[in-house]
Length: 311
Image: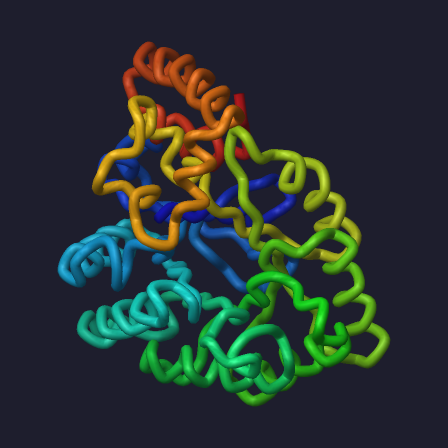
C-alpha cells in the first residue's frame, strides 16, 4: 500500500501512505515538492500506491477516503499498474478521480506496463504491448494521458531499442509525459539511456525500486551513482517490507493479511522462511525503539526513509 519516492540528490522521498496517523507522525506538515530525478516534474514528498488494496483488499469507499486524505494533505502523486487486481485498481482510481473533479493539472498519475493479460501478445515490452497496454490503462483510468509510465521489469525478449522507441512514441503521441523503469538493473538502465542518446530518443527519468530496512543496497549505493551520471531519480516501494515491519506477522499469518490472500503464497513462504524469522526478530527490536520514541514501528520506518535515513 505504501510507496516511497526518492526524487532528488538529497534523497527527499515520495512516500505513498495509507494510514491517517502517519500524516501527524511526520511533523504534521503538507509534503514538500521536489523534482523527480533531474526531470522538471514536481512531485510531493509522498504519494499513494494502489497495489493489492484498490479494487481488491479494500472497498471503493475506503479507497476514496484514503485518496482524498492524501490529496487534501498535499500528496499529488498516485501510482498504479495494469496488473494490479487485474486492472480493477486502475478502474477504481479512475472512478475516484472522475468523482472528485480535481484539476488534472494538479496531480500526477503513474502506471506500469508488462503483465496485461494471458496471451503472449498481452505481456512484455514489445512495441505492440507497450502501446496497446497503455491504451488499455488510459481507458480504465478514464484519462487522456498518464504523467509517467513504467516498464514494470525488463523484457529480455524485446530489443532495448524497440522498448525505448515505443516509450518515445507514446510520449510523442501525448499518452504519457515521461517514462521510467521498475526493478531494472543499473546496467539495463544505462543501456536504455545509451540507446536513447544514440538514436535521439527519450531516456527514462527514474527507476522504481524496493527499499526498506532489509533491502537497501540498490537505492543507497547504485541509484545515487545513476542520478549523478545520467539524472535518473528513484521511486521506491514497500518501506514496510510488505507489512513485516508492522509486526502483524510476528505470531503467524493473520487471516485478513495479504500473505493469506490468493496469489500471495510467495509472501507467506517469505514470512515463514528462516530469513523471514531472522527479520521478524530484528523487527521486535525496532518496535522497542519505536515505543521509546512514542510512535509505531511503521511510522518510524516511514519517517526515517522520508529523511533518506535508515538506522
